Image 1 (cartoon, rainbow, N blue to C red):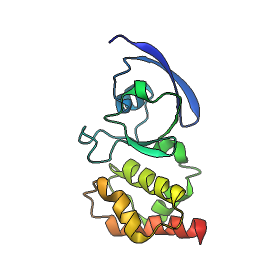
Image 2 (cartoon, helix red, strand yellow):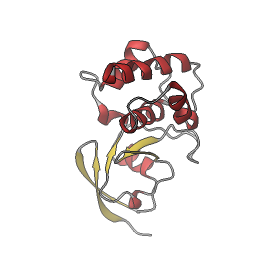
Image 3 (spheres, rainbow, N blue to C red):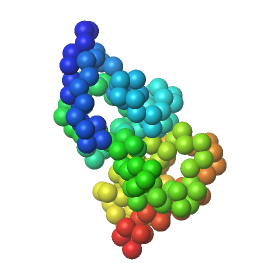
Length: 157
C-alpha cells in the first residue's frame, strides 16, 4: 500500500505523518516521532514493552496498524509527565525505586494507570491480574506493586 498523510494526536500534540497505514504504531512513534518509551519487545503483543494508551485503553502498539488509530488521542509514557514534573504514578515509581532497566515501564505504568483510572480502588489482586500481560525480568515486582499502591492510596486514600 502507498503512503498516506495521517494526523495523530500524540501526547497532546497534533502530529502529521506520511506513512503506510498498515505500519505498526510502534514504528511510527519510535522512528517518525522519536518517542523512546514504547519499546519493541516480542513483536507479538505478548510482553507489553510497546504499550501505549489510545483513549483510555492500553494497546500493544507493535501490532496496532497506525491507520486503525483514527482520531483517538495516543498517550505514551513521555506524555504522562516530564522529568521536571512527573505524573503522580511516575513519582510513586521514583519514590519506591521501582524502575530498574526500564524496558517494561511503558507496559507497567500505563496498564496500572488505566486500571486505576477505571477502578480507583482496585485491589492488589486486581492490580496483579492487570499486569499479568506485562513481562518484567528485573525482579522489581515487589517495588512495582508498592509504587502502584502508593499512587492508588495517595490519589484516593
